[in-house]
Length: 321
Ligand SMILES: C[S@@+](CC[C@H](N)C(=O)[O-])C[C@H]1O[C@@H](n2cnc3c(N)ncnc32)[C@H](O)[C@@H]1O
Image (tube, rainbow, N blue to C red; front, side, top):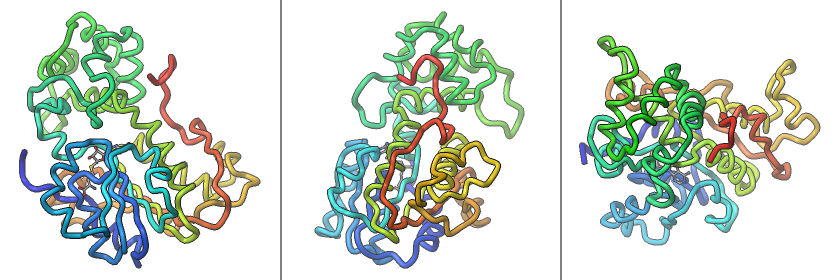
């Protein structure tokens, strides 16, 4: 594993949700940076949820120092209300993979470190290799296009099918790179978008996000805070549309406005815009460059159903799984 994990946007998040008290749920516990930050900022208790069992083994040496102020639970944040089992004063989600998951070649997330083609955050269910080796070429192309905004999707899908069975991340990175122009200096690795898309597919990340936001609406007390950090525009768009729709602030002409036209708002939005890193964090932590934080505050209106299509959740034409 490479250097110590540096939590992204932690200080802006703590400022945006201050004052912190009561019971918070960190739905993406990872290396525990947010959980520790919330406990230090005044949370009475934090419930740390992660789908990856390895993070709890990694937290074992230090988690005990917080006694019963820190409860760790393996599970997905789509179920955060039932995992919490109690009303919450705050929910934080720091989306995507952790640096630990990216850095461990064995987890199969990285195009820079060769490893088994795995990409499962929860280490259960079908791996990236299982899914890529079984899927129709058109489904692979849809995944690359809809989940990665990859314009070379059809070309890459054809090359993946021709190269099957694929078992290693380096093989996949080579197949993808062979279909795209050589990157210019400063441009990202050609496999970036494809690896992102396949990871989202394997972990059903957009469905997780929509269900997690809805579960947070059910779990939060009036006045409770929801804070979400996202790393790419497809994720951020879902978070933004959710918060706008649930606070009835989608704007008059928007086709998303009818989602909650007549129902009372379940959230308010204390900040008009997403919050990004300050210049110091941007220069010291490259992962922070694309990070965006959005915050919403729960009202006392009853929780309701959310229409995933109205949140612009990217969908695969032939079904998401
Ligand atoms: C970016 S890291 C979080 C880092 C954390 N905020 C910290 O400061 O250490 C994301 C973590 O969320 C977990 N994760 C991603 N999606 C999840 C989901 N749907 N349910 C539960 N955990 C999830 C990943 O396994 C990973 O450990």
